Image: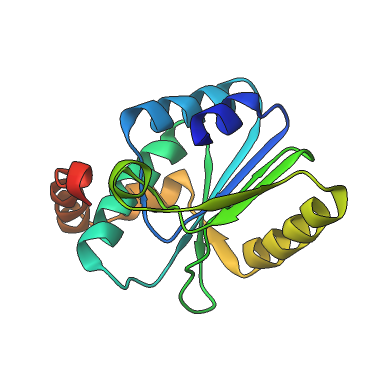
Length: 162
């Protein structure tokens, strides 16, 4: 369902997840959406609750920035919502993180909404969340310490089981 939603995006694709450890097919779909001109934004927590997943998430998110995808870090507390907003047509809210465990192992649920008013409310909620976030810039990637990048890439090795 998520791959299909990402593939259908034409103007906007906003994703919020506390754990962003996407498998290759999802990464490819996100990069393809960005390449076709979709406003792809990923909102992730600044604060960690699971250190290993948080570090792996940094490694994956940094790759997204390299492909022109806008990655934001939520700075007003811990972010634990799981939301996807596709154009003005579809909003998904549920328990599914963007990771293999949620997609293939855990029993997760997402409710999909097509009602215009619901989509508008989700859009306003996410706009407020983006306003309380900081974007990750290419310059941010350049100034990250070698040690942090090394640890994040090492954590990424555990992605299939996170």
